[in-house]
Length: 199
Image (tube, helix red, strand yellow):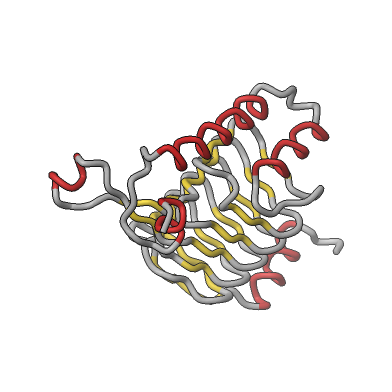
């Protein structure tokens, strides 16, 4: 297996091998151009993200600065938006559904390192995928750890560290992140009554 194949299979791999270094260098060139593109040049920003990501389309919008390791391992659905200072360490693969919003400073980390100091100093690492469903809102400064799956229609509160899977239709927050309650029709009614009295 190549180092890339090992990485995507969740096996221990050496990121400083030539194949993976070359892939990261290619991503950094695109990111350098993206992060210095005029914030008013939506077309160029979108073109660069579509060039970088494994899957994106014309509805994808990301506010610079944005950072990732490979880019090719990131797949986003329609109407994906990430606010400033998003970081996606996509070594293990990141899959995001439709109509997902990230607040500022959201970080997705698919990669980890050995607890054993000798192995860690030798440069070994391993990665697990992160999957996010449809209609998800991730609050500011949230960190999502390797191997996590977040269901559909989920809201994750600001500052949370998500280290376990979250089911559909829940509000979750905290460090570590935990399910607080289900999101129900009452939330819609409360919002309309509070913020849109003439709805």
